[in-house]
Image (cartoon, rainbow over all chains, first blue to last red; front, side):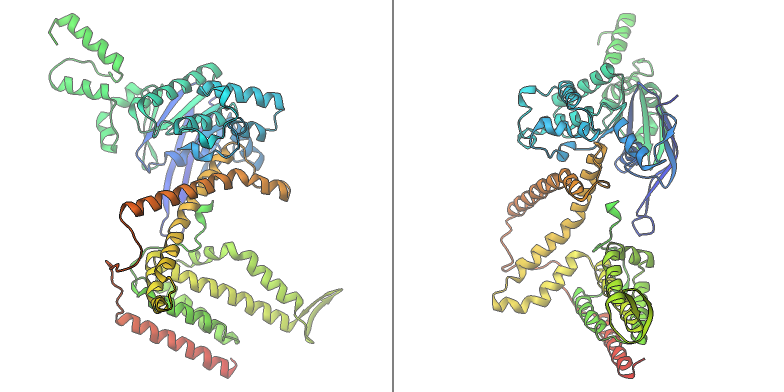
Length: 287
Length: 268
């Protein structure tokens, strides 16, 4: 069975006012357990609205979300239960920190789960280890930390709830390239270690192509859905939505225009390097 | 969701009501409020409701938006109504059961008080729905400028009000965001005893205060970077000018007050 099944989900903001806007329009989608999915789209394409339905923070105007086959909007208890199974890290999560110490802030979620004290302690240590936050700084105030460290603590606060599906809205926004790489690596390491599922919301194609499935949204609908190869093959469509291609795919396209026979479906740096090396080996043309 | 609160929100538009000089709208709103307290007959209420409905229609504001604006005040309105209904003494008892007496006077007063509160609030909503916060403060500043002679810091006050108004939607949005984030971590803001619920608000209030201070700091810095140094000798890009429609609005407002006074005298 799929982990998440979204059926005919529609959400309209400010219904009945001049600001009325259909943010997502009849979305149908299933997400299987264990994958890494990237949700891509332009600002205002409905990505954030969609993910707010996955843990029942927003109620749909029509349609529903099934988690393991159960309707998460069935009752208040079901909505709350969904929040503990689907962890959502919103954009700039560092602004949600409030406790006096880092450890207490990470423990906020597990505490709401009413777990025993030892279990909370274990989860806090594990979550902090996953994001690479040193234990000797557990007693610091989260407000004294640097921006990147705050982000890690905030993400650890959601990881400590040990969600089955981890949804992250632009987790790397505002981080420097090194911090970005590091955070992504840690998130994927968490996925592999815990067997969880990751849904990354992003418009950074170099993040997207690390996932095994890409869902592209446009004006509240799903425009493209498939493996990175399949989605990046529709480069014209992506460009017309106003999205970019990964750098490697762009280079491959430019090479093809120049008459170099780079095969289709090249979108990662490693693939491009291999393709160019293969061409060199075959034709012996100097580069 | 919090986003649906329309208290003091501006609905952009291009109707006659939107284009009126903010000073006209401010003065007429004050006159409207004062006149509302002169109304003591059902005919008077009917006249005010008709006038309000007419302006709402001309401004292209949907009646539903008006009603939604009243939603946060439901408690006050119901409370006012019940208080007047149960605690007005009189001889004309309509209904009596143990300690509960409902008198005709009480019913009358309850209905008129509820009507008065609703009309008062919707009338002022009409001002904020059709006038941008900037225009309101601009108008207010001009109306109050004579007080400058008395060393009242009118410019600073209007700037403070302008900033406060400007940040209401931002703070609501921010609250919404932090609420979502904490709910996603399993925060339960809806159930529990009163002390528990008060404690549950801390994860909301602390980040909100921190971000409000951060924003205030950033705003102050941005203003200083643009060499802001107060109101002295400042000129305006948009000068306020009264037009023919403002005269018409004043005449119509005067007619409304006259109508209310006539109905009051006639007792209809």
